[in-house]
Amino acid sequence: MTRDDPRADDPWAGFTLDPRLPQHAVLRATDRDRSAVLALLSSAYAEGRLDREELDERTSAAQTLKTYGQIAPLVHDLIPQVGPAAGPADLTRWGPREVAAEARRRYDTERRSAVLTFLGPTLICWTIWTAISLGPDGFEMSFPWPLIVMAATLFHLVQVAVQRRERIQHHVRAIERQQAKALRRPRRGQFPI
Image (cartoon, rainbow, N blue to C red; front, top):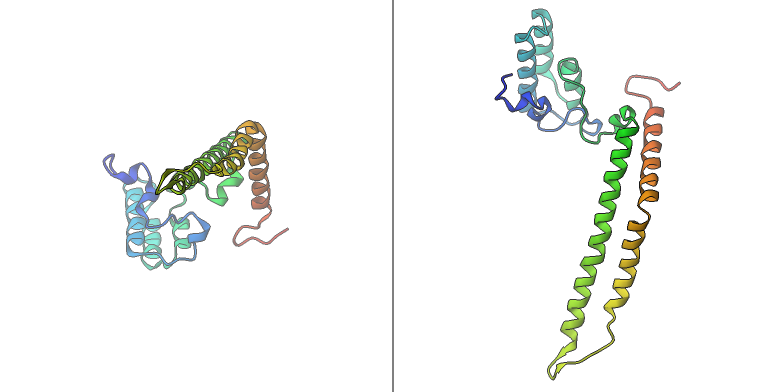
């Protein structure tokens, strides 16, 4: 692959779906996917990472592969093992730094959701209240019921903002539970102990 080739940065980008993700393993591969495998194999052979016999063997397998699950074994030793963004298999490789970063990302998503949950209903309710209050005789002041919606959603927003450290720790514990579960799950082809 040349420097101008987009696959030089991410060889997995040449595939229709990411063959590293377990949920894609049983799906049927496309002609584009078979071509991407062949391009990776040709590049590896040109760089001297495969000998002629290995190239022929893998090329034959690539031309007849049916599912995404058959792709990774053909190229796993030719591509750096950088996993997809949040695939379940990656959890077992995450260290404390990655877990903390993911926990902060989840908290940021939770906070953003709380802000939107406050703003959306508040704006809608005040718009409805204003439309109802504008009668044929002008503006008729009625009970400002949108304040009730604002109070409930604002309480949630303040709670998320004030409990930042606790919420991040909650996410860390959840990720650690996911890691433990992934480690207990036997891998394909292995028997549980």
